Length: 297
Image (cartoon, rainbow, N blue to C red; front, side, top):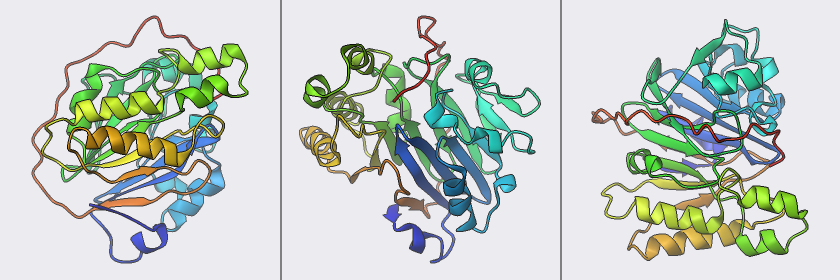
C-alpha cells in the first residue's frame, strides 16, 4: 500500500484500490475512491473542474460515479453538489445533513450508524462525529481488500472512532490548528472559541495524541493523512512533526502526510486482496446538542 504521484498512479496498471485527495481545507474538501470498478466521491467541496479533471485522468465522467458521500452540509464539503443533483447518482448522507444540504429525496440514500450501504465493490459505514453541523459523520470505507477511515471535521475525539481507526489501512484525520498559533493569531475571539470548542476542529495536539492512543499495540501499518489544516493557524511541518513524535512515543513508525489545502494530493493505492473479517460497530446516536451553523472553516 503506497502513495504515488497522481500522474503515475493512473497509468502504471490499474490498482485494486486507489484514493486521492482533491483538496483538504477551508477552501474545499473531496476524496475520489476507486475499487474494483466502483468509483465514489467522498464530499464535493472543491470546484467542479477539479472533480472532472481527476475523473478524466481515470477515463471517467461525473455521471459514471456510483455514489457521492457527504459528511455534513458546510459549504467546503458540498460546494459542487449542485452539479450532481439531477443526475442518476445516489447522494449518501445522514437525515440531518440531507435536510440542511437540501438533497432531493429521489437521489438521497440515507445512512446511519450501524447500517452500512454497499455500492459495487465498496461497503460504506457512517461514524458519527462531534462538529457544529446538523448530523455530521465520518466514514469507514471497506473494499474487502483494504479499508480507509475519513474524519475531516470534528471538534473532539470520541472512543467510537478507535475501532474504525484501528481497522484501517489508510487513516484520514483532521489536524486543523496549532493551539498557540490559533490563540495568538488574527481570528476574532468568538471565532477562536468556536474553532477550539468540542464541536469545532481538532488541534494538532489532539489529533496526535488520539492517533497514538488508538494505534497503541496495533499490528497493522496504516498510512496517515492529516486533513483540513488551517491556512492561518497551522503549518504542515508543525502538524506532521507533532503526529510523528506522538506515534514514536508509542514505538509506532508510520508514513504521515499533511494533505495539500488547495491542490490535488497524493494517490494511495493497494493491490492487496485479503479476506477482511466482518467489521460491525455498535450503533451510536448523533449528539442532540450539536448546533447547525453555517461553515467558515
